[in-house]
Length: 207
Image 1 (cartoon, rainbow, N blue to C red):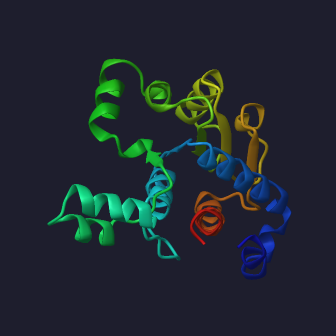
Image 2 (cartoon, rainbow, N blue to C red; image 1 turned 45 degrees about the horizontal axis):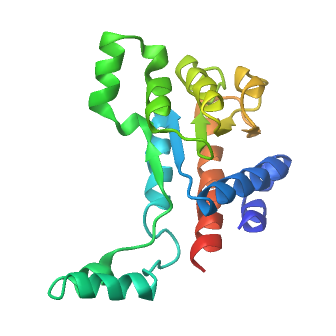
């Protein structure tokens, strides 16, 4: 998947090492029962939800349930079990923090906007989980605070950012600096990166 990404987007060759390292961190977490938390603002918030959509259901591959799980569902629910077993898909556990609208707006209103993702990381995150912070500048205050709490919780922190050095460099285990500076151009390169990561994790888990 990573090689295919480089063929299609040779400009990302400068990020190969970081992308491969991120793939390894994600799979280590998933294999050990961990989950991914994603966050960002604006277009990066939309990217957070997009990533979760690719991980929590079939993306490129079909993900049928293991036969043992299908049999158990049929035993537990003789009438509905077969249909449920046929339609459920394997999932890689992930949560998009920007999609927690009611909780986020309550926390922004009652406490502080720059702590909104930090609160969700504190509530959802566990040691062995991964936080993916997406910030075109790499300096978004609410993403930085989320990263700080993630480190406190014993999580790995991955960041997607633009080409410039940023504050996330000081907090994240890996920062993928795509070679672009303008916001829309950074976002255009973030998408193929996270698509490749999702496809790689899916292939490792469900092939």
